[in-house]
Image (tube, rainbow over all chains, first blue to last red; front, side):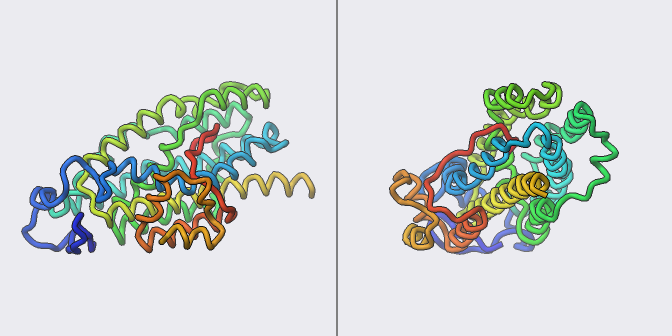
Length: 264
Length: 59
């Protein structure tokens, strides 16, 4: 991977750079996990992602205010399950690739350590969603038999590509989006009242309202401790922009399906 | 300036952006600017500010 140091000098980094070890590489970066602009890495990333946040929020609002929300809420959970079921496998792929690079790549070493911890926190969340769907009368076999959309395949598949063919640090942009904007419990309570659906069907969403702020903060701390170069930061941001766009498209497709099936 | 490029494309409204967000845009690499433009265009392409998404959904 070609990287740019804080001084703008470009260097080669990653696998195949000989005896230069992770610790030696770490020493070439500014201490304190700050970007070239002086912001923390996490603050810089959040600010970049907010540039797409307004557009994503519009897609989200269209879903939560849709007149058929109560009737079709299970569709939303099925779509969400198709994304969440991939969380642990894609993180394992990134952790394994990062571990391969780690002996010569300090950022990869940090990514591997972060993911090793975070994978444990994310296990079985897809099972929670299947339980919630059963509350709504959707058997798990029916959920698992559905082919996930091409948009969801692109959302997760692009991460596998970047992990394998660019750098596993890209996955941190995906995680920053998925866990960076946790469900707001107050909004979820409003949806429960509005739809009249069983509270048990919202168990996974409510749990994430509680868990995701902690996971977001842990990711921020991990990012801020990493010796990221400007190129690493750009890789994370580009991955995050793509994630927001594809998540937004997936929401829009769901809303369009609801609207089409009503008029048809 | 990257902000001029995004404004010209009708994707940001500088009046709705904070100084921090304007600075962030102008410090983006060319590849980040292209990715940002692509993402915003595919999400509807309206001139907007910058906000943290908050809602009932997971993401």
